[in-house]
Each structure stands twice: as structure tokens, then as C-alpha cells.
Image (cartoon, rainbow, N blue to C red; front, side, top):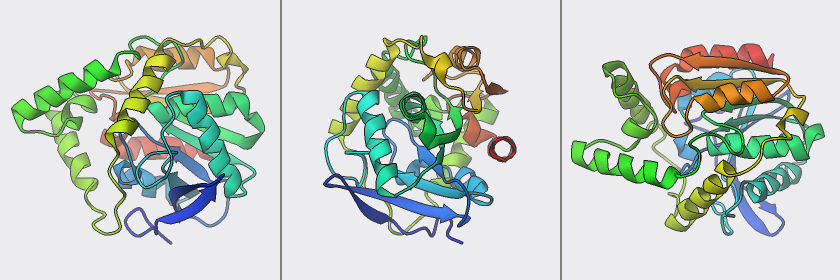
Length: 276
């Protein structure tokens, strides 16, 4: 069975554009489609989370349009990103998927569930929030601040963006960043500055959007986040749980945006119970 470290990077034509993706895990069942965060490519998923989910389910990782090794130009709206993700799913000839959206991927997942409800079975939303959510716009300033702190401290920006500044949070950051380097061969292409700019524009627009129709999503939803998320403030996870009629909420202590990576064992068990 392929793992995060060994899964081959494949290509598929999606309406004339090359999309790159990886398939791993169990060969049967509803695939779990991973939708990732601002600046992320295939190699930015936590191997322990990916392999944990893949132990019981088929898993698909992919780069959306303009991201990493995928061709085309990154759209500047979440809605266009959702349409591209659905086109990718259709190209794979999949009739049903579970969505696992982290951060920006969580925004995209919400749009897919609203526009294409029959395509989706269950949804996991982590480190994310509804359209118009508190503190979602202005992520560019949050990034700039984190990069400044990281440069001064000689650390990776994710030390500041994804984890709390406590000893426990920073230790978890070190362990997470080490795991991201476990895949040494056939790594993805780094994200381009043009893509980051488009993604920031999409996030800013989402933060000014309207979530009034979110209660139309009837799918089972698992929402998880750290209790001190500075990228998509944790209050947004509570707001999602309030708006989504079939949701359950998990808040992880002394954790930030990357709480699901810090508490990977706890989160994977929650995800497995939920997906089952």
C-alpha cells in the first residue's frame, strides 16, 4: 500500500490543464480528497495525518489549478477554486468523495458542498471558517508579520503561523517541520509568488463574503481547530458549528492553526471515527 513517502506523483488532463496528484491508502471505499492551505503543495501535508487517514480509506492529494506542479493560473476567488477541484474529481471519474479541507481548503470545501451536494458524502473542516468570518481578511499582514518574526528568530514562519509560542507548541512545530522533509525523492514544485498573491486575494474576498446559505449543507461535518488560531481565528470554528446543522466540533488545547498536526494522534482517531 502506497504511503505519503512512497506514493507516485501522477498527472491527469482536466479540461486541457495538467493536474498533479497522488493516490494512496486503501483501494476501496469513498476517497478522501485533501484540499490544502495557502502556499501549500503536495509535500506540505503532515505524513502522520495522511497515512493515518489512509490506513482505512483511499486518499487523494492534489494541487489545484496553478499550484505546485499543476498547470494553469491560480484563480483569485474561492468559488473558481471549487469549480476547478470539482473538474478534477470529474476527470478521475469519481461519483462520491469525502472532503478534508484545511484552512483555504476548508473554504473551497464549503463551496463544493453547497454547489455539488450529491458529490459529497462527509466533510472534515480544520483551521477554517465561514465566509465573512471574523479576522479572515487581512491574512497578508499576518503572513508578513510571521515572516518578520521568523527571520529575526532564525525559525520557519510556520513556527509562528501554525503553532502557539509555548514550549509545547514550539516543540510540536519542530516535530511537524521535520516530518515534512521525510519524503526525499520526487517532491513537488514549490508554490509561485503569483499563486500566493491570487490565494491571498481569494481569502480576503472570502472574509468579506456571506455565509447565510451555509445552513443548507446537510452533510455530516467534523470541525477541528486549535484554541489559539491566529490565521483563521478559532471563533470561526464555533461559528461553523453553529451554522452547519449536522456538525460536531473539536477544539484542541494550547494549539494554533496547525492543531491537527500537533495532536495528530487525537485528530486521526476523531477523523477515523467520523468517517466510519
